[in-house]
Length: 296
Image 1 (cartoon, rainbow, N blue to C red):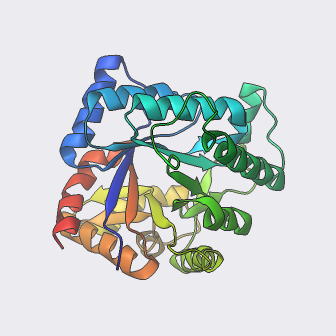
Image 2: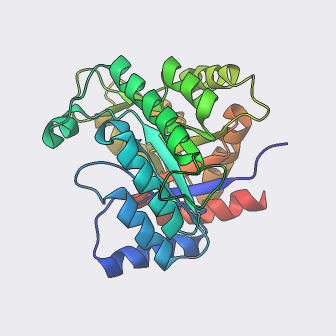
């Protein structure tokens, strides 16, 4: 049977204490299941932001989406994860990725490395976190047992294999880093390419009793009666694509609330996604979509 739907919102904008609590409460009121925070310079620091979100809300899970593993020493990260899980009452979901913005590493004075080196570091981080947080001797102790749920985000074969081996949630951005970009600029992948990537992940996970939950980050959510007109301003960001191709992207939802809901249901049917994340600017627009999908 299909997993139940879950919906998360990734909060990107720094805010004062009062403003932060207010938008976390608003996310809860709208029905989001998970409040998420990214790990980029210039955005909120993930762990204190999630502790504050927990103090302002009661129901939503709280997650990192996703931590840049290159910013973190595994032993120090284990301390942060355990403390945050304890302070949030066992509501934490830990999202990890390799990081993809060279400029951020350079600003932080940290090595960026090759793609292979970044995946190697992420694997070591995942394995060391499992060892440390699984130990009864480790202090502090996380609230959740046997461990804090783990999300791994990535599209390459080695990342998909890592997700299949270790992750409770396999997250897909539906995009790849633009060639030569140092700032993490992304270019979308096609529906057919995403078909292949999801199938590869599930193939790697065949040995598991239960496959990972599948998450998709929706990059664009537009409520409109005129779908073609709504996406034309975005064509300059993807100059090699037509209006029809943009509308067909797995990471784009464009249309009326009912059409958006139908597009979400179609992505579950085609790919198996049951956990969808939207970016903060689309939090309000996506809310009625959640209601329709849950009622379907």
